[in-house]
Image (tube, rainbow, N blue to C red; front, top):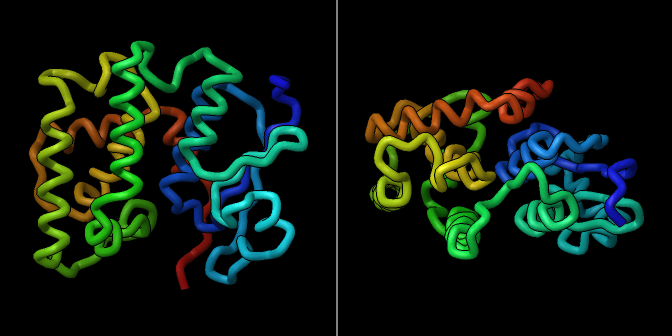
Length: 212
């Protein structure tokens, strides 16, 4: 099944999930028509029996394609890439795709102190004033070290042309940049440029509810 007539994406009600953003951007980049709905995670709507049963992991995002429902953002973007290959979300070479998946997996599984102290409310709502703790500062240093290593000199993208991983990395960097935390200028410029991509602007323009 590769018809696009039945794609439906479920995300968080505040439009703050970095993983929901990644899938939303992927759908926009592939120019696939889809409908969108939200769940109030603060009220536990993702644990409702029907949603938990269909998504398996009771998390957002979840993509429904006909009768098939898939959660976990990288599983979704790879599914979209397989069904709708153009335009591409991932590098075309085997080594490039492997590196892209490595970076995605790392961004989703590491740097927890940084993700806690610079959560995505910093990115989509407002900065915080507390300095990073020592453990979060070490995580930030690791992020910046790796980003410096994988972003080629003079390049605006990781792999010579845009990929979904550029958005994922930029979001993590923007936890620092948009909070005013120090970072190398070329990484700040890279993250700011990714934030101007039309697919990203579409996510940024979604109507977020006011914080309590």
